[in-house]
Amino acid sequence: MNTKPVSNPEFAIEFRDVSYQIRAAHNGKNDTPVRNIVSNVSLKISQSETLVLLGRSGSGKTTLLRLINRMLLPSQGQVFVEGRATTDCDPIRLRRGIGYVIQEAGLFPHFSVAQNIALVPSLEKWEHARTAARVEELLRLVGLDPAEFAARKPRELSGGQRQRVGVARALAADPPILLMDEPFGALDPVTRAELQREFSALASRLKKTIVFVTHDIREALLLASRIALMEAGRLVAVAPPQAFLCNDHPEVQAFTNCLDQHKGAPQ
Amino acid sequence: MTPWNFFAEHRAEILSATLDHLTLVAIAMAFAIAIALPVGMFIVQHRKLSSITLGITSVFQTIPSLALFGFLIPIPFIGGIGRRTAIVALVLYALLPILRNTYVGLTGVDRSILEAAEAMGMTNSQILLRVRFPLALSVILAGIRTATVITIGVATIAAAIGAGGLGTFIFRGVAMVSDAVILAGAIPAALLAIAADALLGLIERRLKVA
Image (cartoon, rainbow over all chains, first blue to last red; front, top):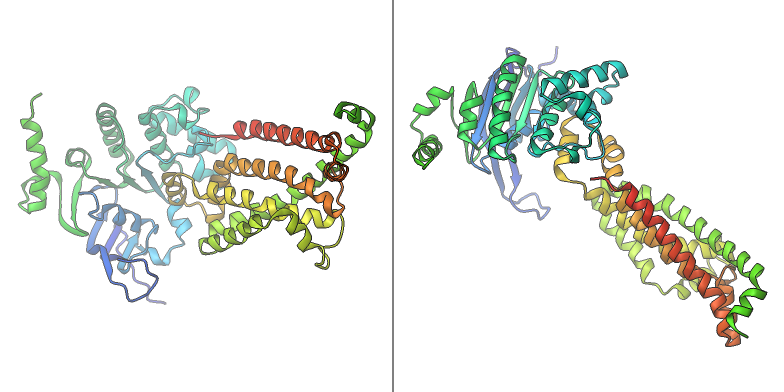
């Protein structure tokens, strides 16, 4: 038996002392100083929990997300997905088993809504009938009428509709893990609130492990089973929403203060 | 002699020269596309080679066309007098617009689309062929359109090394100091360029996504 490091598969995702560095200057030499984007993060994410990575812009939360599906490889430490280190996984297979939703959805403009949703099934060479049935099922799941929307192109959708299609596309091959990078960040406040509510209901129904990146504390409180707060590449607090609000770390305070400010604002 | 009389008397000859000209351009464009498109795709995957490749093709553009035809004559296999040499020179001229537009089109795809494609588990070649290429198509076609118009013009000079085409009339007209004969080559060449530009422009607009 070889001695590949493993993690307890009871955790969907585990970060074990993970750092991610980039070279501060791009002069091609190897002696340039490195800069830590993520520093010594250890975090265990249980099956079917919704973990929200909260933090300011540039705090390293998107980098942490991209380490999960091997869009990035850790400079130090290891990331485990379903008990296996990502360095031991084929990146293509790994990514096809992990749903991914980004801001602005990143839909393919030359594909119809149905083709966009069917992307991973088509890469996995599903039969036509199975794919078609799955696309219809998913469109209903995200609240879009298949008859009306399946044939449309992304440019013929509103921002909110595009994001719904983005979620449907991520769920297409029924991956156990869903990564979401500020998926509702570019939407108007009314549509955002609507999608947040619906997504919260959807998440509790689907029982997927969800890692959700946001800089919006209210979104975090609404969706999270646990909130992980990042500051300058470090994990500074990990707690369920209620306990998170009581944490006295200054960065937690900085975020919770935004909530108070908002309450004080004229209605 | 008025241009009109010359046109009327030599219409069969002009027509055959026009067809020769078109053939010359079509063959050169076919080669140029067959070279520039794969090379463009390759340098998108190997970015370090992109500036040197684009640099080399730009150098060809800076050589005056008559000089390039002259340089090619003594080169074995590709050189000599006649059509083959002309086609080689025309291909070299057509490469840059196609290659540059292919590269710019393929690299200009929206970052979020590429990020999604990568995150969905598409391989590099799948991303290139199914995402980058279809989204770059109208930009690539714009390059082909520019190259075609340039090639139709430059191909008139190919008559200087005996490649035939509409340039024959232009060179003959210059030697005879006859506007009518020059125009018999120049007008059809201009009309060809305008027609090619309009036709390819139409296709380009059809292919535009998003």
